[in-house]
Amino acid sequence: MGEINDVRIFAPEQDIASWQSLFEKMEAQGLVEIVQKPDKFYEVRGSEKLKRGYFKIKLLRCNL
Image 1 (cartoon, rainbow, N blue to C red):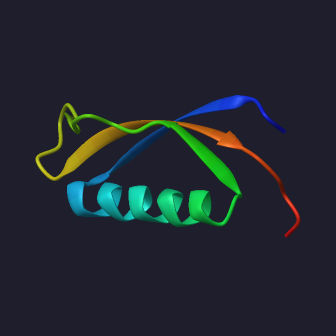
Image 2: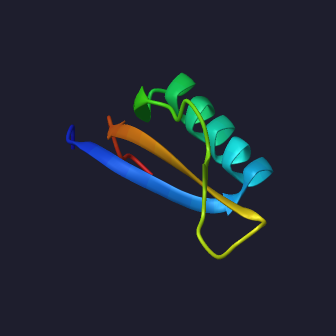
């Protein structure tokens, strides 16, 4: 626990925004710390629908 993890998500832009919302809810519950959110979503080569977003997430606890 406690290491910073790079999370790369390939999805439609709305889904990446949903992942960000989920990470923010997890942060509010003290499960993770969002170290870095994507400042923009990048194009995925070969796909018109998919974007990619990069997050840096630190796991704080795992009592699930």
